[in-house]
Length: 519
Image (cartoon, rainbow, N blue to C red):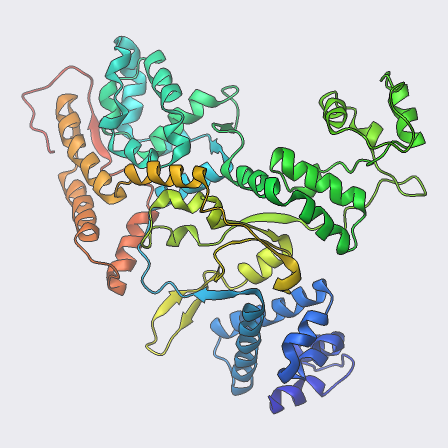
């Protein structure tokens, strides 16, 4: 650390010819003081204001990233060792560690999309060119025939079986079948539809209108549900926690109320209301024609009355104000974000996919801590002693951590045992009964395409079909971890827009039997 200390201490104010790091040191003497005392780093770090803690972590991240994209000098390497050492100390403070992901089971983009769709409860509109040719064909020709409702057997669809691993998608099977039946889509389409095709069906079944950019198929989404369940257990404690951090009690109460009622943490949507009736509130309510005869100055505003005023879009009448009459600032309030404690891409590593969105795999993290600390070094290629590349990802070592908004875990963290609840156990049991292997389902879909293309006289490239089968069989035949070269080839397949076998030609229902077909 001697060279590092000398390098940082060389100048106390920015001067011409300084390196960017020396300029930073001159501009941040408080952080330099923390770095100069490595034996008491943890204590000195915790004494820094929260914004300065984030600034120091950003510095460490930038040093590590810079050395990964260039050929570092000896001095730069010393800085990297210093940065990594201090980041590890901060990880110790927060009970976190880096999962290096050397041998994770690769999951497809399709699976990652399903996890995120359930988390948010929404599905984006799909562009027509992303839909499979067979599905587009059945959309055009389906109305020529009328099918029975019982013919729409979603269990016959390999890709729908991937969907129904999730509780949320099992819960919308009836609306999906109703849409297919109403629009007379041929039930044979189910056998060859892709994940994207089913996303199109779900969007159309739930969209408010045909021009909507997205549709909400579950309300609220699972991230919002997690927030609501967390608040059911911790609302009073979190409100007191926010007050102890210097927030106005009215701000703390309003944020906790929004999180409890709607599962929303977005400060831009927050309306900070008074806790008790003030003269101004009573006057504003009277001006908006509310009956205030039963309310008294200084009394607590009933929760059901707040709901009633909000439903009428008159929340401005309850707005909390400072002594000067200005709306209260939201600057001190934390901007909480829902974080997956285990990355989605690691979800299939020894577990089943639906577990990604379980309450015990989510936590609330303050926005700056979320981006700088938890995701600051995500997806960074780092060399180990064997010169192999891997992706690092920060995970939580304490299984029950449900919220963290600072670096002193004794003061800034909340813990909840979500796994040992009746709801969680019942959900896990149902999910495990529906687990399938995505790659096996993709292979089964290819087999179905042989049958359907023959039945409806589609011409497909047998070479491309065989290539798809070879890749799928390679994945299914491997015991992970797999070799680096295999992983690279497979990852290229996973990132493709998954439409196995683009048709060379698409005929009408009239068969031209005299012509040979490739299957």
